[in-house]
Length: 150
Image (spheres, rainbow, N blue to C red):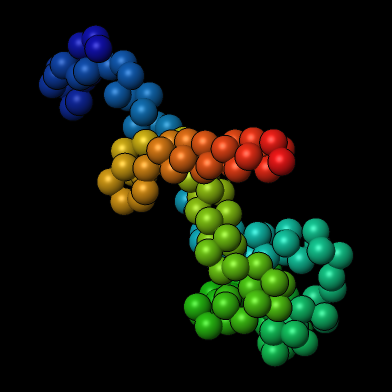
């Protein structure tokens, strides 16, 4: 960080210049993420990957064709009930769709998205995956060896 003189109305003040200024300007330059746009994009991507039409999905979800189109284009905020209905019609868990939206928002914000569950998280909230996998592997190997010996 470097101090640099800055004149404001004839008064000279010293201002820190360096990485902090770059970070502030990057934050100002970042585009605001609109959640309804990201949700719409994910829903459209899922539907198109399945090769389905708006009409098919709107019929299955019991949502008007026009409204579903507006949701996909990010023009309408979808309620949780509506999102659940659309995800059911697409045969995709709501949590998976929201995870994809979350990942896209994180990328737009410049936040690193981990590929795996962090070790601290799994130790604190989940089971010990390494121990469980080793136990399963040992069990499968012993079962396989016993059945192969017969």
